[in-house]
Image 1 (cartoon, rainbow, N blue to C red):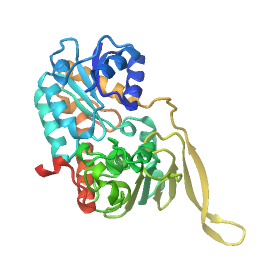
Image 2: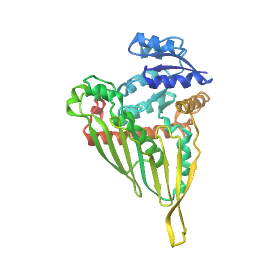
Image 3: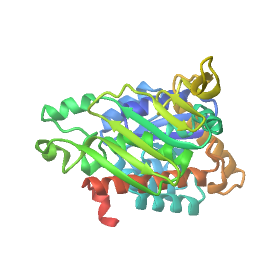
Image 4: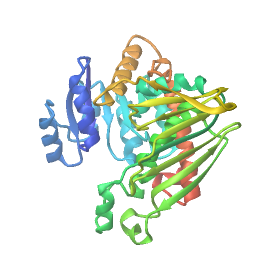
Length: 361
């Protein structure tokens, strides 16, 4: 039984504790929040045993084996290092850190300490994306890919009303790319590797909001990624609603699927060559639906992979060699996280978006 504490009281924390309470291999102990009263209320609402007063309180707790970090991106590294030093395994909400340099430090420290450090990136633990990956050879030589995630945020309304929100704050390492674009970036890296080059076209928030966002920040954007024999575009937004599907195009067929963060439906349109009664055609297609698993809360998959990795480490495996679901090992998952942050670091550099952590770059 792995005993887990959580950090943060946002909706994503609600979702994680939901699957945690349903999993017989783990037990929820309690939550830490900077607001002590909120931590107590949140812990009680979710059936925990006790709230925590500080990150040091979690680190010193003898009945805590692992920690889920759902805190703001800018403080992931600081909090993670405290937990790692105390021998706690950590599952860190996406993105794992503000920059690739921070993520490398986090992973190297965790691996040296013999604890599991894993990013909570849902699609990389979801068997639905594995099915999509395994179907790619049917498409022939891949030439283009388009991944997209655009969801209008009510927090944008708050910003437009002159109120500060954590979701749009350079000091907290947030914004559209970090909060929602990452869902396009990491599947791209997992399926196709790191691109040779990228070009980012950001949609920046109005200058009038910069006093609240503490600097230049994005509300949406498009990234073009170049490979040797293919190109990909990533579309992300927190200030508009994107209703289009994701698409991977090969010379023999095209695969489309919904919801990059939680795919639930996919199909392949394979090109069919043959005589159509008039002449020979190479444009007709044959449609094949892919059967994807259904899960009400896909955070269950990342929790299972996290628990599997901890079990392997407890049995003597090195953290980097422990399994991490369909992407391979913890080392493989960490490499995807690092390459993704390198891409996002470059996209922000091109966009003129700077975070406090960038002074170390």
